[in-house]
Length: 378
Image (cartoon, rainbow, N blue to C red):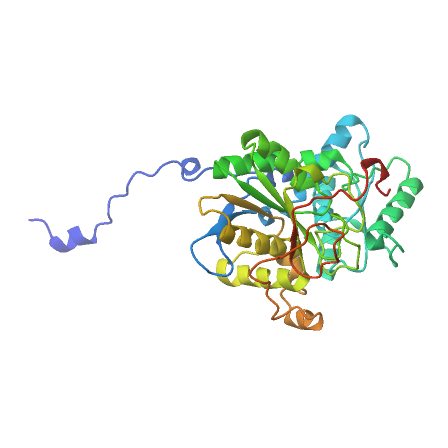
């Protein structure tokens, strides 16, 4: 007779399990450069919570250092292939932060010392992180009288290149390799979303808006490109002013900005970007820096106003980690009067960038290239 107690105490028969390497798709990386790319897209509902409309956000903050890991690696690789950058020679570049992370990564991958010229506006946390990654920081102490901190950094780069023969500057503002670096991102978006009607991009050097759009229009010829700039930026014909926001906008006119590619441009103010960043954090557990907030303001409005079958893709260039002491710090935001000032339900409209200086969210469909290509400041 079978003892019922002994039957109950027997361990259950183990099911046959697949081999460990068949459990999930493998993501093992043998090189640091393999960490870059294949970032996810996430559905973002309208930030004003007015219905079921929304847009798709490409979360480039899932790269180790953000979106500019892509051009950091690509520009260095191409310079090496052309012989412009010899093995072991220094890389010198101007940056407000994010490209610095990409170049620090490229320096580790390819064995180049990296010097990054920045200004006092770079967050202490970013300076500490770049130093930990092995980059040398050179901080300029006064802005250029016309081109501000940006031109002061570029002038310092020119001096460092003269002092160190054989060193190489990727020149993110004018180097076409910058835009080309974003072709893989465009292919990722096309595969992830199958159809894209509107692309929303922040504009700084002009690299990712140009590179992504050129490739996507091979698949979607009628793609509409909406640029997002910062108030106080001179890229699209507004006067240059001291800017609180970093990562978008410019005090010079980069040659990588593909002016004919844009259908319209929006300028967004710091308080409006802060509101959007905090809304994203509270409702979607995803956010980033000034560019992310500004892009979200515009993409959310487009989702509310365009036909409901319009598929909108917005590029979120980075994550929130470097902004803990600015955008997400109440004391900092109160000091700069950035709290409690959400964007309006719709942007102001101007017919031409020279019509008036804008200080809040404003839209213009008349795209003006302020300076001819051959006359861009050095």
